[in-house]
Image (tube, rainbow, N blue to C red):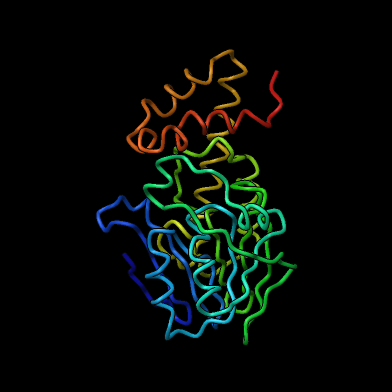
Length: 268
């Protein structure tokens, strides 16, 4: 299923396998001035490609290699002959997709391998220049795109909501916090996230998220230094895991959030 919304010059394209899936299962791509940012999921790849037939499309960028951001790449290349770009650390992972967990194949589908090229410091459309901002907390090859003249910030999976309670074990929460502080310093005027709705004047939302993660991380480290186990810390802060953790075979869980804050942080 595809739904769209227009935000000035930017077209948001939301895709999901089934319309009654939870909002967390929907993914957004953005089309602006011929530049497509992310290409969505395998289950809607053909529909997504057909939808773009009468749209102005010159090139695409993948914000990172995850299957819900790259899966129409091959279809778009075959149909329209466009070039697609990604962070150098994402290129091989997109060209040769890894094995997925069963829930990933059910929800998003397995991407057909595609050929993408490494991004430089900027990518250009006909009328705009987009600065490539490395944001390696969610993935080492994750990037945001910033168009300074309009204050547009295309944030991939960096921003989800102001109080996240689950993450993948591969997420580095301290680095995500640094990434958020970095994009906040750019003073974006419009935030275009992949997992959620567009945010105008996002300063307050970003400040709220940064403060939340700072306090959460400090609390987790403090409890760990007092000798509490990660399981006990999870119970004290978050309580039982929710249905999303079960649906994703614990790949997205509160326990992973605790482990991530402790993984790369020196504690006695």
